[in-house]
Length: 348
Image (cartoon, rainbow, N blue to C red):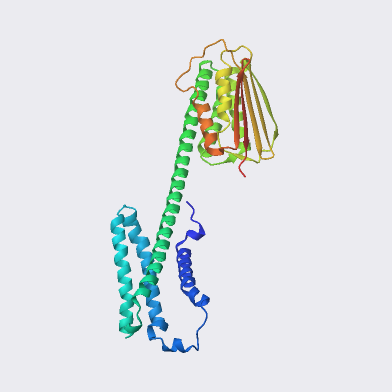
């Protein structure tokens, strides 16, 4: 999964550094200068010493990351709330006595106001802990969402590969049956049929693994398949093709259209004396219209084998996974005619 620029480690570190600098600089920018006031000159060293301020600031920073990286994952996420409260109480007491000790080192104990300090440090401590907790929980939620999306993408790729692998054996099963029929008839069409078959296999092996192929390649694949079927059935079936209004520069998922044509030959030829299959394809203005229509005899009850419906069921699933709401599939079964209408928007 591609990492966004703002998720890179050096960017995260830089943003943290800038945030802390702004946070600790902000009070100096907002509080007016008291330079020259006699009261400031009387204050002991801890109040205006950069060393003292730096130590306190680093204590707050350490508190933020200790809470974020240790306390939240090990206590809050494990529902050890009472232990988390105890740890926070100990941390608050430690920081309070740390500041008191610095005053002691500087011999400024007489200026240390316990009441004022406890109130001030409590609100700062609460702010740091709340910010740290919110930061870590939001960060973990984003990481969990990204991981979930990555898993969903991988599952989607796996499912699409599985569906595609089901289409190929099912189609090959039907084509090989055609070859057997020609061999039994000792037909002269067996050799050109094998050449067509090799072309189909080349497409399935080398192009069907791609996410997208040119619409021109998919159309050539359809023509090869139709030619094979015509060699098998001969005059038993009439084919009407209309590919006149097609911009072949578009790209499409491989083997997306063939199941509809395969289904028409499988269910619309064998039991009819005047079998007719009509196929229309239009691809303009980023939209595709694919229509497949075949006659069938509604009086005959078809005996289905174990592979019946595999191609059509899979293509429905693939359309849902790949195009979501950007397609419309309509199947009309009336008046001894089975018609499939597929409308979809090309990927931009």
